[in-house]
Length: 439
Ligand code: GDP
Ligand code: MG
Image 1 (cartoon, rainbow, N blue to C red):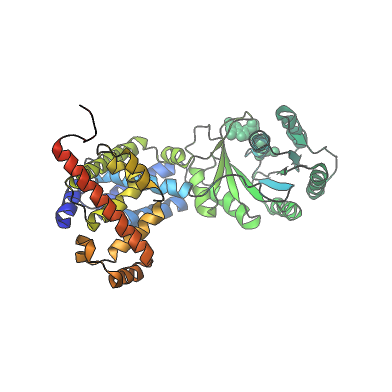
Image 2: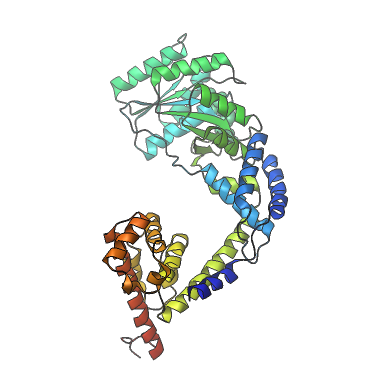
């Protein structure tokens, strides 16, 4: 029975595995797309070879070409790389908490400093003090002061002739005395990485001990992005990146370069000169912009959805016949993670509303995995005839799957309930309508 079942699934899903030649060819196009999006060359090389390894041998969905399938794999990999971590700005420390803004000149540090201050003030109810440490550019401190007035955020009074470390100390002291939650430190930039800049920033860092050190980088930065990110991270140590000018024409390849080189999350995206033009970073959007193949990606997604729906319908039919052993349960568990729970399958059966809720309770991914492991530790016979699983068998299964006997019991009970319910349903089905329903 299970052979027949998996045969059905295979026929549905599979068009064949991706061959090396398919992958190589598709990745040639992807490579060009990434370079056009200004992703740094070493990052492109690395990325492409990693995806290649991953892609070869993967199954191709029916109704898409191998090339399209590869693009989808690339897209998913991009999304995963760009944003697998939380990107909230960390202010959870003993106040006043310092946030240090670093980056090259003109990258948007001062603007982004004010934008973040505004956001923390308005959305998180923080009392924020901003201080400009830019003593190099004439009127740089004035610039921050004006922005502060615009957005209603305090700036540290300017004292001519003070050096960055002095200003930092003064800002931290003032914040402590006056009960500020957050101190935003806006540093001076340089046109290129240079050692005096790094030394200055490091001295400021050591004085303020910031909770966040954000590298502000222009998303239009091309091949240089890798160097900038690498140097700042190595010498100062960054906790995240804020990418500016995402409103421009660039395709944002710098995001991938910086992320790849530093491993630090991209936390924010600047999307304009205005003070509220600051957004959370959206990996999907940026991935599709970098790749420039959004149509292909949604095509493959649609194909995958169709397949899953077909799988679910097949399973639903089988369940309706009252045939449901532990092999089926395992297939089910594997699908659940993908399909948003038992809902996907049960939703296709009539009258299952209440049960859905009960089944979904407590079924997160980890639970699925453990349950799957339990079933995998059973023999073929046990899966077909769960009744034969006695105490000693349970012990063996628990040990084999790294779980416990109570967990094994729980799974068996769940299966029994499901099977019973399926049988009932199929009986109802044979009578042609639900028993309690009028008419
Ligand atoms: P800094 O030298 O790093 O402090 O850079 P500034 O904050 O002074 O910004 C330099 C210029 O870039 C200013 O004209 C800003 O208005 C502009 N800018 C900053 N962020 C963005 C952004 O996200 N989008 C656009 N279009 N312009 C920005
Ligand atoms: Mg500035």
